[in-house]
Length: 339
Image 1 (cartoon, rainbow, N blue to C red):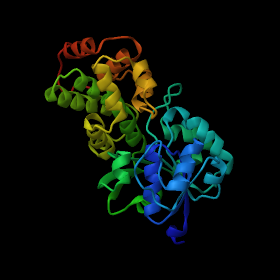
Image 2: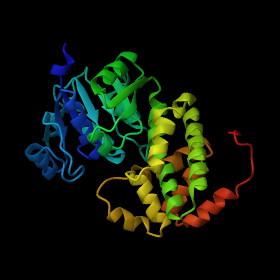
Image 3: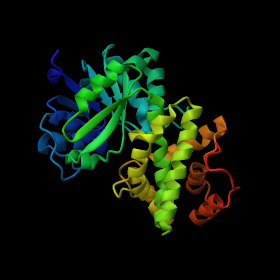
């Protein structure tokens, strides 16, 4: 089959979902994009622009938006899910009856479910059945939506337990400005993608407090160490965290001005409350909810994650940002690589 004749379903028309849909459209595929908001669907169809979540950028004319999830998912050999993690289960459940039994499903959502502590692949295994694992891929890496939409050279990884599925996704997504590697470590890629958002909030707090580049570099480095500790405990490949979905995405999200999670942290460091910040944001900062998941999961598994716990305490327990930094800096002294 000529894959260019394949029509693709993309579920989620936020900034990242829209950028992915446009990328696939630019690659020559017909794309059906599911939008929650009618105004978003109308804007994409009438103006080839997502005026709510990716304003000012022209989208591929091969993208057609709809608020009808069934029409977007039905009869598609490839479906990409790009919705916030806290609604992922609900949206996936609504898709179940319409998915082709042979459909390849790509998750581009980043997070850990609060109640179950599952990543998105775990939610899909529960929702679609364990057999989906052989048709599932995860797409992740340092990739701000707006930069992908304007064709800034970007490099990501596609992870699947099935090498053929990973290769298929690689070929569909690859473009001269969008390089895709393959990986077999699904859980490692997902954990790197999720937990880096929590560390990015901490990085933003550091910047909001005006603590300097030494502090930020140390925080990113030690943040990576605790992401890796959690990953190894959950049987991830430790090498994954030195790759694109690990240190690559962590650096981007902790330092980039387009990072919503870094922005949330910076505003906290400057003295704003979480309630004030969230009320002013239309788009989701995944790290806020993931901080809760990581706190509970790490406690359950007995994994030491002091930075993530400090972020949780600042967000949910009223700990001041400066006190959180002090507590981290005055912890018991230890060997750098003592796990």
